[in-house]
Length: 342
Image (cartoon, rainbow, N blue to C red; front, side, top):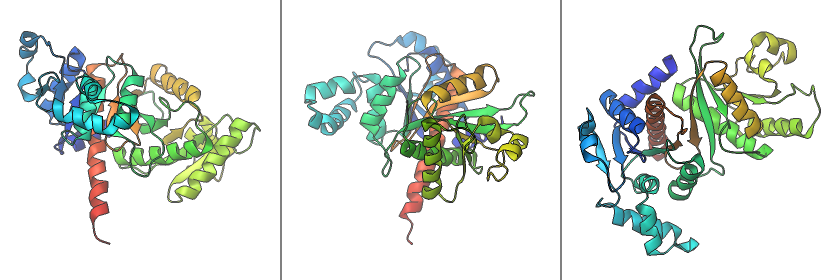
């Protein structure tokens, strides 16, 4: 898993603080302790007002973590005031803002928004809808971005995998039926996410059941239009479409179906036409193909915030901590570059 090892190494070189909003879950605690041992990030665990202190104290390595309890945290008043300032135009009063700040996953997002942490993670217990809604409402969308989308980072590293390495499937977790314009934005964001995480050149395939006009349908036309929009918006990226998966993934098939393809059947960023296709595709790759899937990872937010599957393992959470850290490191590098004089 060389790409994952690289992400873990890069995260260990940083000094980021990541908040885990479900700090009472044993999987979350285990991942937090391991992340701190590996030096991946500083960890804040957010726990309810009545934790089992004796059980927590017995966990080896727990003293390396920072524990926040919203009901007693000295930061809660500040965070409630921040939430009120952000949401009063929606009719949220001060008492309602305080109730929100006392809620662990909202508290975690507010820590990031207020600058007390660099990223947050939840979803091992709560639904994806709740975690993502809070991230968008509290942390907000990045400047210049219209759409928050998601991707899965896939690692192909088993002996039976014909091609080893990392790739991205997007959007396989959030945007249900993107327009051509939204597909364009998802493609460009996903390419940048891939390059940020792997330091490899992105080769983007806009997927369809058609290759280069082999079928006519409004669904095909949408992908064709999205491909043209993406090429115009990001001429420096390698983008091709519309392509069937085999023409995007197998060089021999690409030579037959799309001989002039700039990605030559070696795509590593796969853009699905809708959530039906993306969700089904990623689960087939994971469950039948045996690929390692990390995600869904959110892109388009002003600060990193990520969702977990409720069936996740502690190892899955550890990997998400590393990815969230890597996203924060890249955000800082972009900000620093933007501050440099011309």
